[in-house]
Image 1 (tube, rainbow, N blue to C red):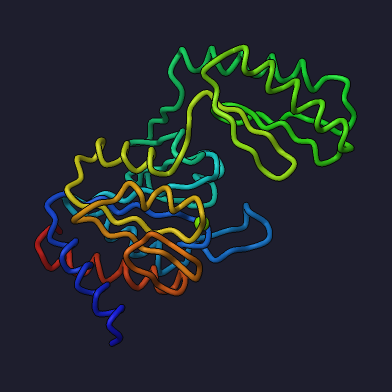
Image 2: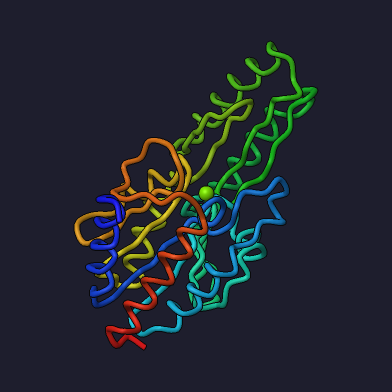
Length: 258
Ligand SMILES: [Mg+2]
């Protein structure tokens, strides 16, 4: 066993002894190998088995934390109701089969945001608006450069006038939301809901670095695959994640949480 593998095994052994455990997992690239068609993605059967074992244990909660919206995450993950789901980078949460998302105030703000941005986009060729759970995305990849610049400037002015909105810039897309989002928010929320004394979070992507930021002493952060990370430990791929979850389930069962 390498030094890294030994350190991970030690950390897993310590985490298994925590009184109330939260096992939070990214989905795509972490439980499910990447596929071209997003709705075809499925968790490895070994990962699903381990998740079922962990979910069945006392004082042990499993949650999926994804950038997908909640409906898409529920469809591809096919997890039992006791598995908590956090979609849209922390905005949408399914707890005990009940979904919670925006407050009444946020819903009203979202409606004002939508109206303002649709008004800006109207009549511009190649510009379209995609509705998102907590806001929207203004797409300009089909528009020319001059139109893109003009539309972005107008949108920022209109949204700025509303106040309190959050902006995220992507490739040919400008996103506005009524709530700042990150997987760290999602994990903090889950830690509270569950009353967790120890948290495992595993993820493979740049947005998972936000998730790792929410972890501290007594938690276990796990990067899946290559790339720079703030996580304490690393495994190669979803198959290795499934192995680790099975090991954790075995340790927890042995410690009498069954
Ligand atoms: Mg991922």
